[in-house]
Amino acid sequence: MRRYGLYDTTRGLTTLAAAGGAGVLLWAATLVGQQTDGRFWAEMAIVAGAGLVMALSQVIGGWTKGLRLRVSPGTFLLAFVPVLIVVGWIMVASQPGHGWHEGTLVSWSRSVGILGLVHDLGRWRDVLAFGFGLVLGLSFDTVPALAPVTEPAAAPIPASRPVPARVPADEPVTAERREVVAPGMGQPREAVVGPRRGRAPNRMD
Image (tube, rainbow, N blue to C red; front, top):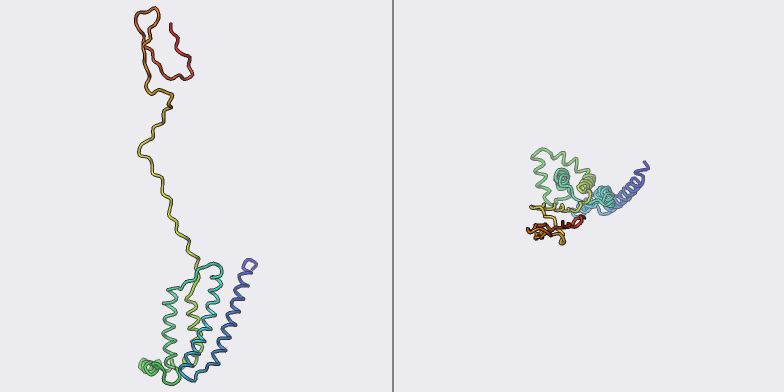
């Protein structure tokens, strides 16, 4: 309970504010009335707005926590579109007077045998309008924000050939040779002169 205390408090206050806003919209709808077709559709739109406010109050909580707002395609196609067709059909067939396509939908309802059902549900058209706005609001959702895509670092290219070790400049690559004539001997003797690695110099006999 302590872990979600702040979250529950914020959600409760948001829901309360949405309920208050929906109540104000419902009160405003009663002031419009249903005497004419224009007033009828204006009142239904305000009632649907009250349902939309209630649904969006649950989405705002996730949006304020850094989540990304989006429209859920599955909810929109599988839930909202059928509700739109059914509620729209009942609204048009039950509107007062002879409004837009009222006679056409009444005739279709009579042909398929659902005129009585449409007439009965038409008595609750305010509730249907509220549910219409509610389902519309439920089509919105919040998901975590997308992380930026980073390209993987390129792997180092292995050397195709080993790099030969550098030879110090003071060491001869090829042993230098010179002839040294030993004292007391008529024949020269060949001596190898190379790098000195901590050894004493050659002594002549």
